[in-house]
Image 1 (cartoon, rainbow, N blue to C red):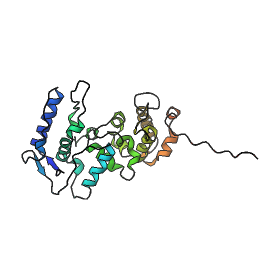
Image 2 (cartoon, helix red, strand yellow):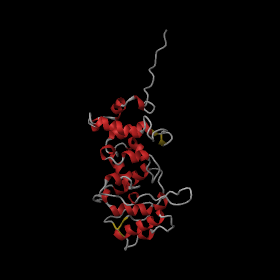
Image 3 (tube, one colour):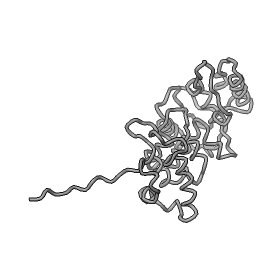
Image 4 (cartoon, one colour):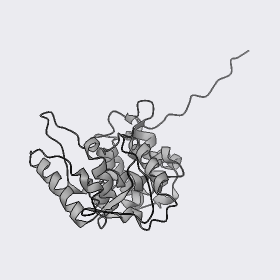
Length: 250
């Protein structure tokens, strides 16, 4: 297993140049030699071995890397630009989806090199984003499956809608409400209709939560309370109470 390192400025620049070639439709070999090159990366103060393998979901990845980093004495690890860029380069072949014509879908730089000064973009990093969300909900990560249940290296519309808002992504009641409404636990995917702009969609919930925030302290509301406050348009997603059992008459 490789030892975790951090890319330096030269390493990050080389990684970004590689991504730019792909973004322009060209082909290039990932500069994976930068992972160990003293010219492009530097060791950490502690030895941490990480696996070069696939992960089944954002949650599996976040839990794995949290266990690797926990208790190692690393300072401000969430803001360690070079560390997260190094990890992105390590996994770049797995994280780069292909379009129908075979071109690599690179996306913006923030997906590969975390924008540590802009939280709205920080969460877009394919590896640091899930880690930060997991850390916020580590006591009950299943309640955040709406943001962590997707495939490794992905983030969909709902993540885009909510994870960029610090007051939302750290709110346990709100995130559990999102998971309850829109996550299909059996199919391990978003429920049909969760995306888009239709009534009851996640985007509509964002609007409703904004209105609620004018009246209530959202951090003080639990998921059951929020679910009970939602208007009727959310009934198609809201769990319905089990029917009461009626005793048979004698």
